[in-house]
Image (tube, rainbow, N blue to C red; front, side):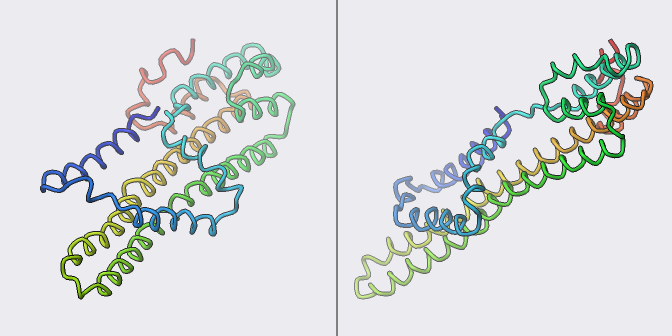
Length: 260
C-alpha cells in the first residue's frame, strides 16, 4: 500500500475536523443527509452522463492504483536489463528465450520475445511505442474521471447552498428557523469543495504521477530491449539507461550488483 496516499488523506481530513473542533463546533451539525445526497448523488450522476459505462466499471481498479505501492522501480528495471544484456552478449540473443519465460512484466516479456524472433528494430520500436501510448491513453481516461468528479462536486455544492437559501427565504416568517437553515445551506458547499480538493483532485494527481512513472519505466525497457537486440556492450547499455535516472541515483551504488 502507498502510505503517502493514506497519510495524505488522514492529514487532510484530520486538519479539517480538527479545525472544526478547535472552533467549538460539533461533528453532528456537519451531518446533513439531504446535502450529502444532492452533492454526492448529483456528482456521480453527472459522471455517469459524462462517461461510458465500461469506463465507469473500471473505477475500482483505477482507484486501487492510487493506493498501491509502485511496482516498477527504475534501478531494478535497469539491473534486470543489464543482466539480460550480459547474457545476450555472452551466449547470444537466442539464449534469452528461457529468460523471457520467467519475466513477470508483460511489456518486457513481449518486447524481448519480439527481439528474439528477429523483428526489425524500427518495427519493434513502433510496436512498443504504440503500446506505451495506449497505456497512457487508458490512464488519462481514468484520471479524467476523477478530474470530472472534482469539477462537478463544488458546483453541486453551490446548487445545494442555493436551494437551502431558497428554503430559508421561504421561511422568513419564522426567525427561529433561519440559523439552522443557513448553516444547513452552506454544508452542501463544504461537502462539494472538500470532497473535490481533499479526495477527487488529489487522487487524479496521484494517478497522473503513477502514469508518468509507468510510462517512463516502459521507455527504459524499450531502449534496453533495442540495445540488447543490437548487441551493445552491457556497460554501454547501463550508461544509456542510467540517463533516465535522477542524478542522485546515477552513482555506482544505485545500480550495485547490476553487472553480477
